Image (cartoon, rainbow, N blue to C red; front, side):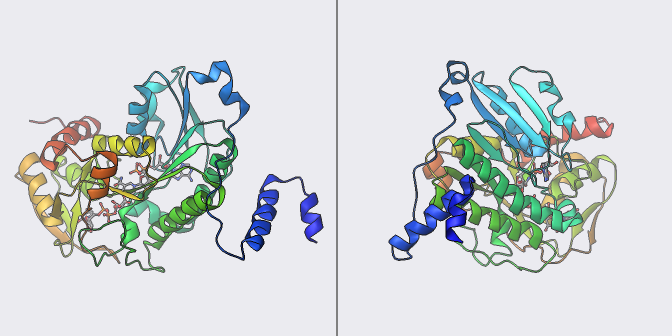
Length: 364
Ligand SMILES: NC(=O)c1ccc[n+]([C@@H]2O[C@H](COP(=O)([O-])OP(=O)(O)OC[C@H]3O[C@@H](n4cnc5c(N)ncnc54)[C@H](O)[C@@H]3O)[C@@H](O)[C@H]2O)c1
Ligand SMILES: O=C(O)[C@H]1O[C@H](OP(=O)(O)OP(=O)(O)OC[C@H]2O[C@@H](n3ccc(=O)[nH]c3=O)[C@H](O)[C@@H]2O)[C@H](O)[C@@H](O)[C@@H]1O
């Protein structure tokens, strides 16, 4: 039987068999890192040397499209986006349509993808609770099979890969603020589990590929991010409150209203992700703004800044809503030289302008 496996011309099988053999000879102990695989010979060809080919999965989404804008500012970068447009839109990337250094591929990452790239920013996954709960099994497949596919690609072409994980890996945290060494308090069978457990498995896959196959990995734990281009009916709190205030609708604070979040403006987030990708630390590293607000405080702030005439009402919450969340960003400061620059009161007006344009209600 074992001999038959050796005869299969499948590189995955060969690695598996080689790994098993090595494990036996090390007395069953864990095998640590191997050198990363050799990149394709194309990488050394003159034509390709000039450009860094960067794949962004989920690049038509909110954070992904801002990341693409930033990466495209560098003439040395060639950017390839893959997206299935579940929560993203081509419109977010229209400024790059037809650009010689840009490609957009309609693709679902739960299916394998073969492209020659040097770096992978792996963002594809619905992020708003209403969207990730909509098809929970698909969310899990995206996190598990999708991440496996992207790691398989990274292994094949020798690319460095960054995963956008989430503060939701801490669940309903019992440690506050959250440090990266906290293992979290997550319900494994709840309605949010497809997302938070999915991301936890995605992190595990990243570290196992790193240990077992020497893949260069980066893991960012993103805390609530907001800014222009969020879907207007996205369901997340900042976009909900802004759209409601602009439309003269009451702001819906979910009970109890004392739950907290920390909000990071999208340009700060993109800066943190690029620093992490280009730096030497694998992470996981928290990237977020430590300014912490209750949802009632957020509603009061939006009301005061956008439309003092509107009402704030309390509505039912959904199960397992984390009661508090605030990143400890000591590691990001020390290892990436990163900290956020834009405070909530400066970020909201930047987002308001974009929302008013798209909703079609100008400021009076
Ligand atoms: N925005 C936040 O506050 C936040 C916080 C923590 C983590 N994150 C993570 O950052 C990433 C981006 O979040 P976002 O806020 O931009 O969300 P988003 O929903 O705007 O973007 C996600 C993108 O992924 C695409 N996508 C989803 N499933 C896919 C699949 N199977 N194949 C291909 N494409 C697929 C969507 O169409 C969309 O364009 C996600 O991985 C999310 O988990 C975001
Ligand atoms: O930052 C993160 O790590 C994660 O945060 C979000 O999860 P959540 O914080 O629950 O995001 P929201 O849906 O925006 O809710 C934030 C808080 O606002 C409250 N809320 C939401 C919407 C609303 O209309 N009113 C309201 O009070 C919710 O009850 C919750 O307490 C999403 O799951 C992901 O985008 C992301 O991975």
